[in-house]
View (spheres, rainbow, N blue to C red):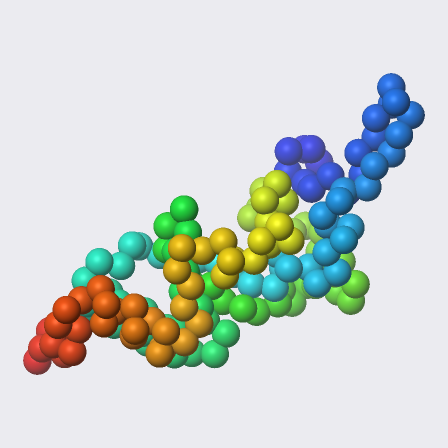
Length: 145
């Protein structure tokens, strides 16, 4: 396995004669990174775009957020391969997205909600944002008529 494609759980410093266990993954008892999907979405610009996001965030376990990397659909759902104790049940054959993951800065450091510029977990929150963003928010329905 390529070292670039895995999180180092143990770091061996042969010169110093030390073995150090990864400080994040070994402390993370909830397997935070394996309990959601963050899907990048196009930057919403129009009333129609935001109306679509209102529909999405109206569903259970769906959030919308914007951070330095753009806009995302956050789906709070655990991986079906996550075993008790936070162990991956298919580690040797896990998908590339899992292999490419790095914990340099992860939700153990700061939750998505805390790290986001905006985070919406409900219709009401997003609608409030939309009313501020668009002066004539209520007129969005005219788009469909």
